[in-house]
Length: 316
Image (cartoon, rainbow, N blue to C red; front, side, top):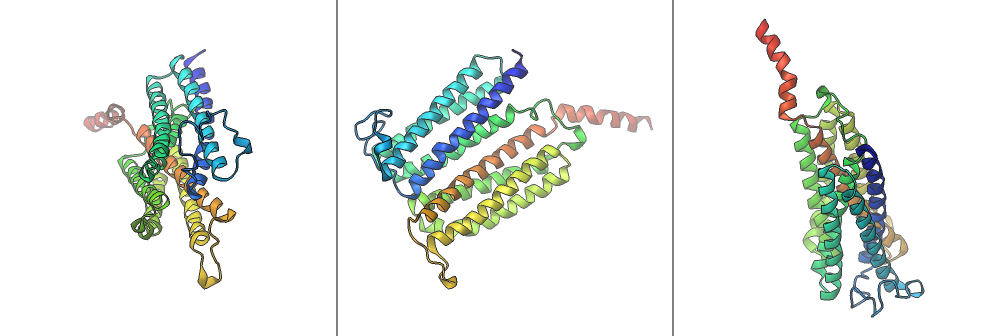
Protein backbone atom coordinates (compact mmCIF):
# COMPACT_ATOMS: atom_id res chain seq x y z
CA UNK A 1 0.00 0.00 0.00
CA UNK A 2 1.41 3.39 -0.99
CA UNK A 3 1.78 6.40 1.29
CA UNK A 4 -1.05 8.08 -0.63
CA UNK A 5 -3.31 5.09 0.09
CA UNK A 6 -2.34 5.24 3.75
CA UNK A 7 -3.32 8.88 3.97
CA UNK A 8 -6.59 8.15 2.16
CA UNK A 9 -7.54 5.50 4.72
CA UNK A 10 -6.27 7.63 7.58
CA UNK A 11 -8.38 10.49 6.23
CA UNK A 12 -11.45 8.29 6.40
CA UNK A 13 -10.60 7.17 9.93
CA UNK A 14 -9.98 10.79 10.92
CA UNK A 15 -13.41 11.77 9.58
CA UNK A 16 -15.08 8.87 11.40
CA UNK A 17 -13.31 9.77 14.66
CA UNK A 18 -14.33 13.43 14.39
CA UNK A 19 -17.94 12.53 13.61
CA UNK A 20 -18.12 10.07 16.50
CA UNK A 21 -16.57 12.70 18.78
CA UNK A 22 -19.71 14.78 18.27
CA UNK A 23 -21.61 12.10 20.22
CA UNK A 24 -19.93 12.65 23.64
CA UNK A 25 -19.76 16.38 22.87
CA UNK A 26 -23.51 16.60 22.19
CA UNK A 27 -24.52 14.39 25.12
CA UNK A 28 -22.09 16.29 27.35
CA UNK A 29 -23.72 19.57 26.30
CA UNK A 30 -27.12 18.21 27.35
CA UNK A 31 -25.65 16.93 30.65
CA UNK A 32 -24.35 20.41 31.42
CA UNK A 33 -27.61 22.09 30.38
CA UNK A 34 -29.70 19.95 32.75
CA UNK A 35 -26.96 19.95 35.43
CA UNK A 36 -26.64 16.16 35.46
CA UNK A 37 -22.86 16.04 35.83
CA UNK A 38 -23.04 14.61 39.32
CA UNK A 39 -25.72 11.98 38.65
CA UNK A 40 -23.16 9.49 39.98
CA UNK A 41 -20.80 10.13 42.87
CA UNK A 42 -18.29 7.53 41.66
CA UNK A 43 -16.00 7.12 38.65
CA UNK A 44 -15.00 5.16 36.59
CA UNK A 45 -17.81 3.02 38.00
CA UNK A 46 -21.45 4.11 37.97
CA UNK A 47 -23.19 3.36 41.27
CA UNK A 48 -20.62 0.62 41.75
CA UNK A 49 -21.26 -0.97 38.34
CA UNK A 50 -18.63 -1.29 35.64
CA UNK A 51 -18.88 0.86 32.54
CA UNK A 52 -20.49 -1.91 30.46
CA UNK A 53 -22.36 -3.70 33.26
CA UNK A 54 -24.43 -0.73 34.42
CA UNK A 55 -28.12 -1.21 33.45
CA UNK A 56 -28.09 1.91 31.28
CA UNK A 57 -31.15 1.21 29.14
CA UNK A 58 -33.32 0.71 32.22
CA UNK A 59 -32.09 3.92 33.85
CA UNK A 60 -33.85 7.28 33.49
CA UNK A 61 -33.28 11.00 33.82
CA UNK A 62 -29.89 12.34 34.85
CA UNK A 63 -28.35 8.89 35.26
CA UNK A 64 -29.36 7.88 31.76
CA UNK A 65 -27.77 11.03 30.33
CA UNK A 66 -24.57 10.91 32.38
CA UNK A 67 -23.88 7.24 31.80
CA UNK A 68 -24.64 7.73 28.11
CA UNK A 69 -22.01 10.47 28.11
CA UNK A 70 -19.52 8.08 29.71
CA UNK A 71 -20.25 5.36 27.15
CA UNK A 72 -19.84 7.86 24.32
CA UNK A 73 -16.51 8.93 25.81
CA UNK A 74 -15.47 5.29 25.99
CA UNK A 75 -16.38 4.87 22.31
CA UNK A 76 -14.30 7.85 21.18
CA UNK A 77 -11.41 6.60 23.31
CA UNK A 78 -11.52 3.24 21.54
CA UNK A 79 -11.79 4.93 18.13
CA UNK A 80 -8.77 7.10 18.89
CA UNK A 81 -6.76 3.99 19.76
CA UNK A 82 -7.69 2.49 16.39
CA UNK A 83 -6.67 5.73 14.69
CA UNK A 84 -3.32 5.75 16.49
CA UNK A 85 -2.67 2.09 15.73
CA UNK A 86 -3.25 2.67 12.02
CA UNK A 87 -1.10 5.82 11.92
CA UNK A 88 1.84 4.26 13.73
CA UNK A 89 1.82 0.95 11.85
CA UNK A 90 1.71 2.46 8.37
CA UNK A 91 3.98 4.72 6.35
CA UNK A 92 2.30 8.02 7.19
CA UNK A 93 4.00 11.38 7.28
CA UNK A 94 5.90 12.14 10.52
CA UNK A 95 3.84 15.29 11.11
CA UNK A 96 0.63 13.29 10.83
CA UNK A 97 1.91 10.64 13.25
CA UNK A 98 2.87 13.35 15.71
CA UNK A 99 -0.58 14.93 15.49
CA UNK A 100 -2.30 11.57 16.00
CA UNK A 101 -0.13 10.98 19.08
CA UNK A 102 -1.11 14.39 20.47
CA UNK A 103 -4.80 13.61 19.82
CA UNK A 104 -4.51 10.29 21.66
CA UNK A 105 -2.91 11.97 24.69
CA UNK A 106 -5.52 14.75 24.57
CA UNK A 107 -8.41 12.25 24.54
CA UNK A 108 -6.90 10.43 27.54
CA UNK A 109 -6.45 13.74 29.37
CA UNK A 110 -10.05 14.71 28.57
CA UNK A 111 -11.33 11.46 30.04
CA UNK A 112 -9.29 11.96 33.20
CA UNK A 113 -10.57 15.52 33.50
CA UNK A 114 -14.15 14.29 33.29
CA UNK A 115 -13.51 11.63 35.92
CA UNK A 116 -11.75 14.08 38.25
CA UNK A 117 -14.71 16.42 37.98
CA UNK A 118 -16.94 13.66 39.41
CA UNK A 119 -14.51 12.37 42.05
CA UNK A 120 -13.80 15.86 43.38
CA UNK A 121 -17.31 17.24 42.70
CA UNK A 122 -15.68 20.40 41.38
CA UNK A 123 -17.40 22.74 38.94
CA UNK A 124 -14.09 24.34 37.97
CA UNK A 125 -13.00 20.96 36.61
CA UNK A 126 -16.30 20.69 34.73
CA UNK A 127 -15.46 24.07 33.18
CA UNK A 128 -11.99 22.86 32.16
CA UNK A 129 -13.49 19.63 30.82
CA UNK A 130 -15.85 21.61 28.61
CA UNK A 131 -13.15 24.00 27.38
CA UNK A 132 -10.64 21.26 26.64
CA UNK A 133 -13.23 19.49 24.49
CA UNK A 134 -12.83 22.32 21.96
CA UNK A 135 -9.06 21.78 21.89
CA UNK A 136 -9.41 18.03 21.32
CA UNK A 137 -12.04 18.43 18.62
CA UNK A 138 -10.00 21.13 16.86
CA UNK A 139 -7.01 18.79 16.73
CA UNK A 140 -9.25 16.19 15.13
CA UNK A 141 -10.42 18.76 12.58
CA UNK A 142 -6.82 19.63 11.73
CA UNK A 143 -6.05 15.94 11.22
CA UNK A 144 -8.97 15.64 8.78
CA UNK A 145 -7.58 18.62 6.85
CA UNK A 146 -3.97 17.40 6.89
CA UNK A 147 -4.86 13.97 5.50
CA UNK A 148 -7.16 15.34 2.81
CA UNK A 149 -6.35 15.57 -0.91
CA UNK A 150 -6.22 19.37 -0.88
CA UNK A 151 -3.45 19.50 1.72
CA UNK A 152 -0.44 18.20 -0.26
CA UNK A 153 0.87 18.88 -2.75
CA UNK A 154 -0.09 22.59 -2.74
CA UNK A 155 -3.03 22.96 -5.08
CA UNK A 156 -2.46 26.62 -5.82
CA UNK A 157 0.22 28.57 -7.71
CA UNK A 158 2.35 31.14 -5.93
CA UNK A 159 0.22 34.01 -7.21
CA UNK A 160 -2.88 32.61 -5.48
CA UNK A 161 -1.32 31.92 -2.10
CA UNK A 162 -2.33 34.12 0.81
CA UNK A 163 0.03 36.57 2.45
CA UNK A 164 0.77 37.46 6.06
CA UNK A 165 -2.43 39.58 6.46
CA UNK A 166 -4.51 36.42 6.00
CA UNK A 167 -2.51 34.64 8.71
CA UNK A 168 -2.93 37.56 11.11
CA UNK A 169 -6.67 37.78 10.37
CA UNK A 170 -7.13 34.04 10.93
CA UNK A 171 -5.10 34.13 14.14
CA UNK A 172 -7.08 37.08 15.47
CA UNK A 173 -10.36 35.31 14.70
CA UNK A 174 -9.26 32.18 16.57
CA UNK A 175 -8.19 34.31 19.57
CA UNK A 176 -11.53 36.15 19.66
CA UNK A 177 -13.50 32.91 19.33
CA UNK A 178 -11.42 31.30 22.08
CA UNK A 179 -12.24 34.15 24.45
CA UNK A 180 -15.92 33.98 23.55
CA UNK A 181 -15.91 30.20 24.09
CA UNK A 182 -14.34 30.68 27.53
CA UNK A 183 -16.96 33.30 28.42
CA UNK A 184 -19.70 30.91 27.36
CA UNK A 185 -18.16 28.15 29.48
CA UNK A 186 -18.02 30.45 32.49
CA UNK A 187 -21.68 31.23 31.98
CA UNK A 188 -22.76 27.59 31.60
CA UNK A 189 -20.55 25.89 34.18
CA UNK A 190 -19.87 28.59 36.77
CA UNK A 191 -22.88 30.88 36.44
CA UNK A 192 -20.53 33.87 36.22
CA UNK A 193 -22.36 37.20 36.40
CA UNK A 194 -19.47 38.91 34.60
CA UNK A 195 -19.67 36.43 31.72
CA UNK A 196 -23.43 36.96 31.57
CA UNK A 197 -22.81 40.69 31.02
CA UNK A 198 -19.98 40.30 28.48
CA UNK A 199 -20.71 37.13 26.50
CA UNK A 200 -23.77 38.34 24.49
CA UNK A 201 -22.14 41.63 23.50
CA UNK A 202 -18.74 40.13 22.72
CA UNK A 203 -20.46 38.29 19.87
CA UNK A 204 -20.19 41.58 17.96
CA UNK A 205 -16.38 41.32 18.11
CA UNK A 206 -16.61 37.74 16.84
CA UNK A 207 -18.77 38.84 13.92
CA UNK A 208 -16.39 41.66 12.98
CA UNK A 209 -13.36 39.35 13.17
CA UNK A 210 -15.13 36.83 10.91
CA UNK A 211 -15.96 39.58 8.38
CA UNK A 212 -12.34 40.77 8.34
CA UNK A 213 -11.02 37.25 7.80
CA UNK A 214 -13.55 36.59 5.04
CA UNK A 215 -12.62 39.85 3.27
CA UNK A 216 -8.88 39.14 3.49
CA UNK A 217 -9.40 35.55 2.32
CA UNK A 218 -11.50 36.70 -0.62
CA UNK A 219 -8.90 39.27 -1.67
CA UNK A 220 -6.16 36.64 -1.53
CA UNK A 221 -7.66 34.86 -4.54
CA UNK A 222 -6.98 31.48 -2.94
CA UNK A 223 -9.90 29.06 -3.57
CA UNK A 224 -8.90 26.93 -0.59
CA UNK A 225 -8.77 29.90 1.76
CA UNK A 226 -12.00 31.34 0.40
CA UNK A 227 -13.72 28.01 1.05
CA UNK A 228 -12.37 27.87 4.61
CA UNK A 229 -13.43 31.46 5.31
CA UNK A 230 -16.89 30.73 3.91
CA UNK A 231 -17.35 27.81 6.32
CA UNK A 232 -16.23 29.95 9.24
CA UNK A 233 -18.61 32.76 8.27
CA UNK A 234 -21.51 30.32 7.94
CA UNK A 235 -20.90 28.82 11.39
CA UNK A 236 -20.48 32.26 12.99
CA UNK A 237 -23.81 33.38 11.48
CA UNK A 238 -25.55 30.19 12.66
CA UNK A 239 -24.06 30.55 16.13
CA UNK A 240 -25.23 34.17 16.35
CA UNK A 241 -28.77 33.11 15.47
CA UNK A 242 -28.63 30.32 18.07
CA UNK A 243 -27.34 32.84 20.61
CA UNK A 244 -30.44 34.98 20.15
CA UNK A 245 -32.61 31.85 20.34
CA UNK A 246 -30.80 30.74 23.50
CA UNK A 247 -31.46 34.09 25.14
CA UNK A 248 -35.13 33.78 24.19
CA UNK A 249 -35.65 30.28 25.60
CA UNK A 250 -33.59 31.04 28.71
CA UNK A 251 -34.84 34.52 29.67
CA UNK A 252 -37.72 35.13 27.29
CA UNK A 253 -38.79 38.36 25.62
CA UNK A 254 -41.56 39.63 27.94
CA UNK A 255 -42.09 42.75 25.85
CA UNK A 256 -43.14 40.48 22.99
CA UNK A 257 -45.11 38.07 25.14
CA UNK A 258 -42.47 35.33 24.99
CA UNK A 259 -42.05 33.61 28.37
CA UNK A 260 -39.17 31.24 29.10
CA UNK A 261 -40.08 27.80 30.44
CA UNK A 262 -37.11 26.56 32.45
CA UNK A 263 -35.76 23.09 31.55
CA UNK A 264 -38.37 22.61 28.84
CA UNK A 265 -37.36 20.29 25.97
CA UNK A 266 -37.08 23.31 23.65
CA UNK A 267 -34.86 25.20 26.07
CA UNK A 268 -32.57 22.22 26.70
CA UNK A 269 -32.29 21.53 22.95
CA UNK A 270 -31.49 25.13 21.92
CA UNK A 271 -29.02 25.75 24.74
CA UNK A 272 -27.20 22.48 24.08
CA UNK A 273 -27.12 23.10 20.33
CA UNK A 274 -25.65 26.55 20.96
CA UNK A 275 -22.81 24.90 22.87
CA UNK A 276 -22.14 22.29 20.16
CA UNK A 277 -22.22 24.80 17.29
CA UNK A 278 -19.90 27.07 19.27
CA UNK A 279 -17.39 24.23 19.44
CA UNK A 280 -17.81 23.52 15.73
CA UNK A 281 -17.26 27.21 14.97
CA UNK A 282 -14.03 27.28 16.95
CA UNK A 283 -12.78 24.09 15.30
CA UNK A 284 -13.53 25.46 11.83
CA UNK A 285 -11.60 28.65 12.61
CA UNK A 286 -8.61 26.66 13.91
CA UNK A 287 -8.58 24.56 10.73
CA UNK A 288 -8.76 27.76 8.65
CA UNK A 289 -5.77 29.15 10.57
CA UNK A 290 -3.72 26.00 10.01
CA UNK A 291 -4.69 25.94 6.33
CA UNK A 292 -3.65 29.57 5.98
CA UNK A 293 -0.27 28.87 7.56
CA UNK A 294 0.24 25.83 5.29
CA UNK A 295 -0.61 27.85 2.17
CA UNK A 296 1.84 30.64 2.94
CA UNK A 297 4.84 30.47 0.59
CA UNK A 298 8.07 29.54 2.34
CA UNK A 299 10.96 31.99 2.24
CA UNK A 300 12.83 29.72 -0.15
CA UNK A 301 9.94 29.37 -2.59
CA UNK A 302 9.24 33.08 -2.42
CA UNK A 303 12.90 33.81 -3.17
CA UNK A 304 12.88 31.32 -6.05
CA UNK A 305 9.76 32.95 -7.49
CA UNK A 306 11.22 36.44 -7.25
CA UNK A 307 14.70 35.60 -8.62
CA UNK A 308 13.65 35.65 -12.32
CA UNK A 309 12.13 39.08 -11.75
CA UNK A 310 15.36 40.28 -10.13
CA UNK A 311 17.39 38.88 -13.00
CA UNK A 312 15.12 40.54 -15.54
CA UNK A 313 15.50 43.82 -13.71
CA UNK A 314 19.27 43.47 -13.75
CA UNK A 315 19.32 42.85 -17.51
CA UNK A 316 17.52 46.05 -18.32
